[in-house]
Image 1 (cartoon, rainbow, N blue to C red):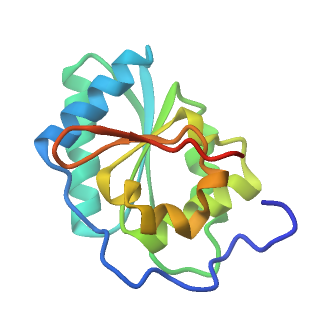
Image 2 (cartoon, helix red, strand yellow):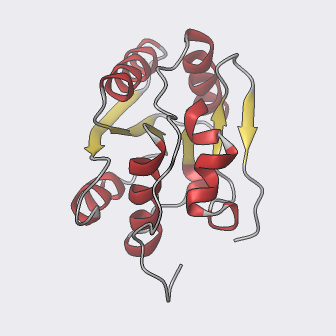
Length: 162
């Protein structure tokens, strides 16, 4: 992403702020376990739905025997996402997990790519993030390896060329 500003020039025009379903949370936990993860860091937008999803994932992860190193939230709009991005990437977990509305997620992700060692290949995400319109805000070419769960419990994977 070098050479361009990490700030979006055009925010999302749709609502991708969804509360994760039980099937979605179960799939995220299954995917994390299949990757051999023990420690995760959870990042979410600050909406009620995103926070509820983050709590559900954290609870299910603890029930599966995993450890959450931290949770970081980010706003939908801000002058900069550098502080939450730095905090999110700093814990260096086995996996990161992300949830939240499209615009805030995209702004956070662009900042992560621009300024931190975070990598999409070590990240799981919820259904709203897997929406092609949400992924397009960052660009699939920058998200190679990002994997997530759909609301019905299936999984999705970005295979863009980074």
